[in-house]
Length: 191
Image (cartoon, rainbow, N blue to C red):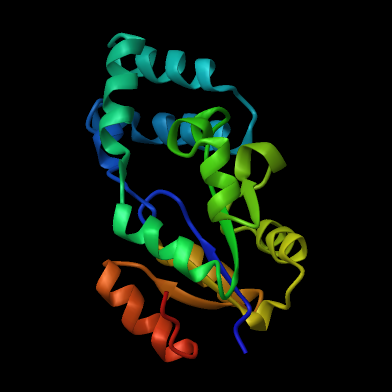
């Protein structure tokens, strides 16, 4: 029986176009940008260092980097509303690879309290998906078994990681596809 749903943020609850950041730099600098993103997601560097390093790498202003990042974060309002409905029936977690300070830009503290039973942010815990440890930490905080949990993410590497610890998964592409796959894993849940 499914008792918990764990959602990724970017690509599921927020529409994500990480490629916009990569478009700021030449292909020979992709690995450097990837390293900066991972350092931020792990919590090794703070938000301002991330912005400064990305701006320097792209040879643009910090303000231009902020504008690109802000533009890529668009709420998936129907999915956020659905999470509110689902929370009436399931424990709900947020598990996201995210740099410090970003969570406050996407969900207010009041929204986090309304939407989620637990929030695990990579930079706060020093681990990133698809690490086994971050999935296990999330499950522990929710107080459920791995086989009682569905993890929803838009990246196959992350759903593969969740499956390795025993979670059921939905590789998210659209809201409608999510509903179809959720229904196949659970009893129908309405508002």
